[in-house]
Amino acid sequence: MAKLVQCIPNFSEGKDEKVIQGLVDVATSVGGVTLLDHSSDGSHNRSVFTLVGSVDGIKEVAFLLAKKALETIDMRKHKGEHPRMGAMDVCPFVPIKDITMEETIEISKEVASRMHDELGLTVTLYEKAASAPHRTNLAKVRKGQFEGMAEKLQEEQWKPDYGTKLHETFGLVAVGARMPLVAFNVNLSTSDVGIANKIAKIVRGSSGGYRNCKGIGIMIEERNIAQVSMNMVDFEGTPLYRVLETIRFEAKRYGVTVVGTEIIGLTPAKALIDCAEHYLQVEDFDYSKQVLENHLLG
Image (cartoon, rainbow, N blue to C red; front, top):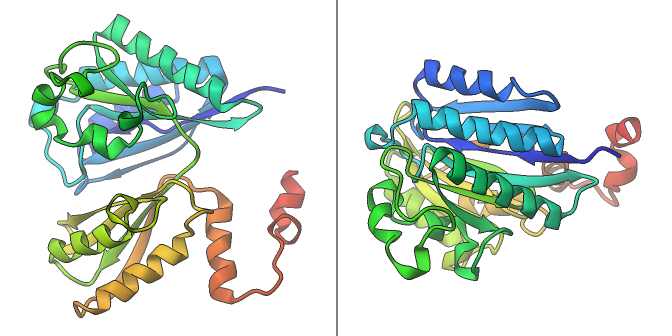
């Protein structure tokens, strides 16, 4: 059976259509790779691509996208609501079919090494590929962002895995391997980003909330609303509906309501079906047997 790997590179550009189109052109240029989805957000000033393909194809397209980001994105000029440290900010690989996590980790290391050797990029490995336990969590790797990263990388515990100092225009890219996650955002009926930050602190695992939730509060300028922006790293361990209801409950103390939610990029169907099962109060539901598409797609 053919091995399939997913790659979800995030780029620090969500406004310039010419730059984004250039990345799309590269993403669709490699045989054996399919660009499943790409989305851009002006307030975040960030674009997220979702690709799936063969091992060789996915390694090649990840490298070429890093090269394109190097050529077209200058981090010295970048401003946006989402935390960031590099032109290609993160580049995670996810095992999809007939491939182990160990093999996926090796793919991430091969790509990271090539990014440094051929492009001169500065790279830190994270998640399952991390070279030390304290580098596993992306939020800790990214803390300080682009503006503070040059100084941070001089510290012994944060020296990059590839390279010695921050790339002047590109910044730092985190490359790694992980299981599927859901990028899930909750929009609030307030322009006070402080409220979103307080709620994010309650739900995220690092500050005592849900272990599988990473979250921050940000401002959506074009809508003048605050948002709790999250990565759900294990949607089965911590379902989306549970976090949503916690946010809804906590927002009430500030006289705030949830006005909508967002899913960025692609998500496993089960993450949404689990929500449907919960809110519909379906009894004795069997995901493997009662979802039509599971039978059609095998």
